[in-house]
Length: 418
Ligand SMILES: Cc1cc2nc3c(=O)[nH]c(=O)nc-3n(C[C@H](O)[C@H](O)[C@H](O)COP(=O)(O)O)c2cc1C
Image (cartoon, rainbow, N blue to C red; front, side, top):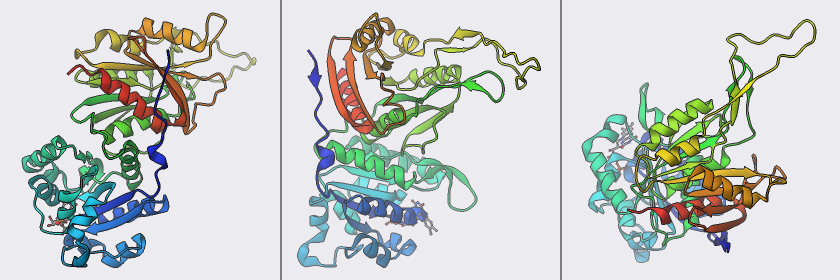
């Protein structure tokens, strides 16, 4: 019996109300782009800066871009009680950038300006995107505040690594506004009452397609775009998970809050996934590792022969990473998910072959795409059947790759034993 997953109804709700909090970090200017992305995609945005944020970007910019008056304190428009109403009526509150100071105030329930009052009155999902120097981020006080906030169900996005204010670089950058936007959208898609059911979980996602080199410039590759794996990483982060994304040859921006490990070959993918899997609660193998690789790799570029003959290429099988993880999963209770792109053949239908593959690999879930028409690769949409080792089958109708990712995480979360 095949169950039908819920359709993507939340994404169709009109004008979600977003409160965009901006605190006083150098990355405040990036919140202008974030604001634009929200307004241009039909969100109703109220910007609530702190007084320090207004030192970086003035109120006229926020007011003009949002089309609403802007205040940092609780004494403006008091007859409308903004210190309570803004938080109460929000569908999501996102603070980007969130300073060390803002994190501390939020963790301790201080309420000395409009933004901190809003954080106390909001009953909707809250996303904080910290940005600060590495020393401030790593300070035990900040880390304790982050832990407190996460325990309460707040999504605190891991900062990115890269250039900081001035000449130095390290962990503490605000993730790209486009990626913060996507993460907030994933939070909104789940709805106000959805629990942060992956909070505190470590998950590993692989994405993309591996390359198997023939010589320094040529390789055997495949058509995997990495879009599904990136959607899985992004939605897991939006549900509170600590995400490691092992990315094979994908040219997409890193999802906000996700640690990305870049690899090229199947062997590199295997090493990176196995290293990250040792402490993981779930592993989702959305990458397409090559089944075969050339039996030798030439150190020099292979030249054309004068006589017009072509070299023959011998292939050897690559290790089966999914089977290896399923067999050797380090943690009891770690959930392992594989993907199968099937076309069906004379020996069986797509689902027959997928069931056999699920049994052979020993994983908990297998996400089955029918790729007979070649429609999945590089497309923004996907449809699949999620087969469970327990005999379950969840049919996910055609929708975005983010929507499929949410259903996959629903199935994973349901299988956690602790
Ligand atoms: C040039 C400059 C850049 C700053 N950048 C940051 C930053 O990126 N992150 C941070 O936590 N604090 C930063 N600060 C310090 C905050 O502005 C300061 O802690 C302030 O009190 C924060 O107030 P708020 O949390 O109410 O916005 C910066 C200060 C200056 C002068």
